[in-house]
Length: 432
Image 1 (cartoon, one colour):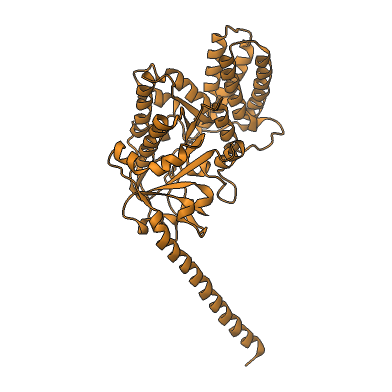
Image 2 (cartoon, rainbow, N blue to C red; image 1 turned 120 degrees about the vertical axis):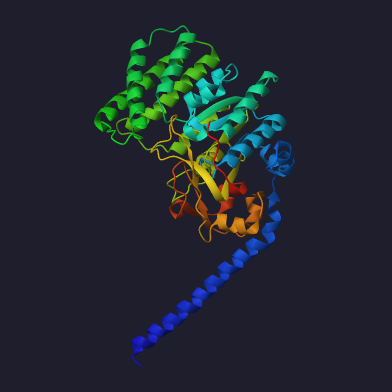
């Protein structure tokens, strides 16, 4: 036998032996995960609010100690995620003093909505005007209807807020309204320039959902870059004006949000992650110790670290830097059923979410494991459930129609979330 052949055989035997060891180690880790942590699964009732409330007392006790609670969603279109987050939000407001519910939605759109929420007789119309399509469902409307009722009989009001910056025209509307309230008429030319740039940028954003739409990127970059500097100049002038503190704070909030949208077009602009901006906008909601915020957003954003090789998410990470030991995040996931989704390239206010079948979980995923461990709906604290820090694929479905293998990333649940709520079979939300 030639020496090279003997070496090849030895290497093959060694590789097979090592593979068997690795396989045995992985199998042992999964076996441990399937045994002891099964005791950490706590059943939740979806039957009604009172039964759900009774089933999540330990979870609420942990959340209630924090100033910020993130309530995640494994898809942007699962009815149960909306319904149960409404239940949790209600408990936190009634029992733990939370007074803000912030959505993954534009800051100024939600500010404008909040100004009208307690007076309106048509919440649906407000939702369609100010909330992107992922929130336009009857499950979310239940929360807003309840907040309206709650605010009628409580001195400490609950506000709805936004933490994102996708559209610009609402910023102009908010700035115009506040300047009028303050009796200031000296910035007409600035508002006109900002309005033109905002309309151009929003036109491009909404236009991406139209098949034959073409963006004039050179014009967009020029006008929006100029818009940033106009907004920056307006901010500096407003800071020097004496006016009511709350009015000035809201005015500066609108200008800040406008600058956030224009900033990517600023010449020599440095990259600023969307998640760091959403964390910053959350911090602006908190003006004192009495303020406590609940955030409704995607798992990918609210997690305590980025996913997909640090390219996506991490709002939770930034919040922990801003509020050390004062942030709790609940992730949510599902295995089978259906979900709401859209073929729109951008989720906007006119986006309609339609039902799609959810693909079966891939082998070796957290969703597959949880589906085999329980026949019902459960929650668990991630460190107790995954003491061995096992890493497995988790599914992250956005507002698009896909739910297959391309949307998974390998994660340690305990590194992303403090607790996790699992709904074995879920449904698409009920569209307004």
